[in-house]
Image (cartoon, rainbow, N blue to C red; front, side, top):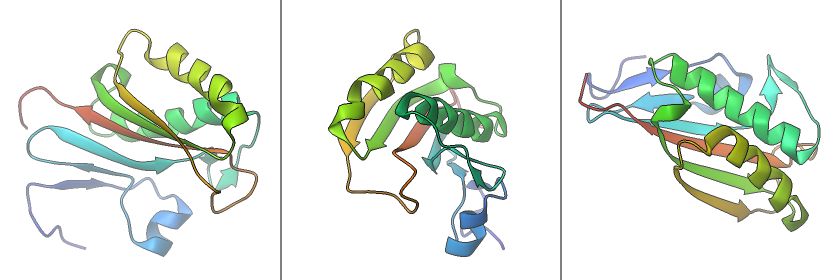
Length: 135
């Protein structure tokens, strides 16, 4: 598959839904912005379910792995979005976010949604990072 614009870099991690639904795990734009698609606690094709806190940490780890493929890390994150299925999970997911990003302080949103593709998933995250300067 060729890129519509040669200056856009698309990153795949081989996750099963990437191929099935036709998306990239991350997309790096020529202006230095890197958009990471929604990440859940699916690792190696298997759901690593757990508490909302554990799912949040695992989901962010999936996003960090995608950022590493373009040479960025959590310190480069400028925006996060956390989608959760229950208001009761706000504190646990918020605690995970604080532990991971307290020194970075990205813009953040937490949104309650009705559900995900598998009912054992209770957290999904999106991350945007910025590379100072352009490649």
